[in-house]
Image 1: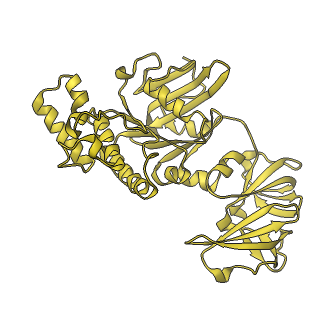
Image 2 (image 1 turned 135 degrees about the horizontal axis):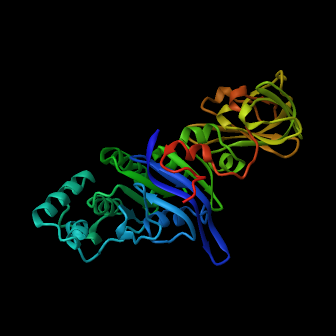
Image 3 (image 1 turned 180 degrees about the horizontal axis):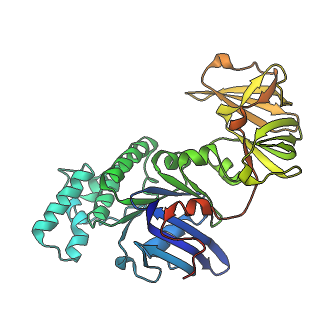
Length: 378
C-alpha cells in the first residue's frame, strides 16, 4: 500500500449559499501524478486552492506529509503552485524569475546559481538565462513557471490548467514533457484540467469531480473501461448509454430490458443488482457490434443513418426506434453496414458495463492509499 503525501478528510467549502466542495475525501500517494478532472464550476480548482492554502476549507481536515495544514498559510506548506497565466515577472529575465524564491530565502549565491542552472536543464531551457519573459513563447513561459516552482524542491506541485493557453499541437507536446519531468523528479503532481484526453494521457490516477463530489477515483484505464456512474460514463470519451430495467439475474449475468429490446449483460456481484432494478448499460463505440441477423441474448435493432469519416476512424450512426442514436467506431470501412440497412446490435458480455447509480464517495479508491481513512475523526 502506497503512502499518502496529501490527505483530505470530510472537506467542505461553502461560499454563502453555494456549496462548492462537498465532503471531499481523497488520499494522494507520494510520487504520483493525480488529475482532478471535471466540467467548469465542479470544484476542482477550489480543491487545489485549499491544498495550496489560497483558500481555507469551511470544515474538514487537510494533511501534507501527515501534518495538518488547513489553517496554515501557503508559504508554510511544502507545496508550490503553477497557474494557467504562469504569474511570471515581465520585468525580469528568465534567470531572475526562476531565482526569485531563493533570493527571498537568502540562499547563498553559489548554491542559488547551481540550483537555477539545474532547474533550467530539467525544463530544457539551457541558454535562455538572459531572455526576457516578454520575448518567450507560451510553451517556454510555462517551462519557466515550472522551473520556478521545482527550484524550491517542493514535495507536492499543484498545477491549475497550466496548458490551457497553449495551441493544440504545443499542448500535446507539453503533456508528454510534463509527464516525463514528473517521473524524473519524483515529485507528486496534482493537476487540474477539464480536458479528458489530457487527463487520460498524463495521469496515474484521475479523480472525476461533479458538483463538488468525487464520483470516481481510479486509474485512467479503470475509469474508461469501468465507469461507476452515468456521469463518469458520459464525461470520459464517447459512450452508448442504454437506460434499462433488470428483468432477471442468473449468477454473474442478467437480462435487461430497454424500450427497444432486450440484452444480456455481465454483472458484478458486489453491486447487488436484482430484478426490477433500474440501471444504465454503457458500451464504448469501439466495443459495439452489429449483425444483419438476430444474435442470441439480444433483440435491440436499428437502422444505419450515416457514416462519418474522422481521420483515423469511421463512425457509423444507428438510429433505434425510440430515437436513441448509437455510435459504432471502426478503423476499416469494410466492417460497416450500408446507410438505411437494418442491423442487430450486441456486444461481448464483459464490454457492457452495468451502472447502478449511487451518490456515494468513492471510498474504495480512497483507501487504496495509506494515510487517511475517510471515516476518520480528528
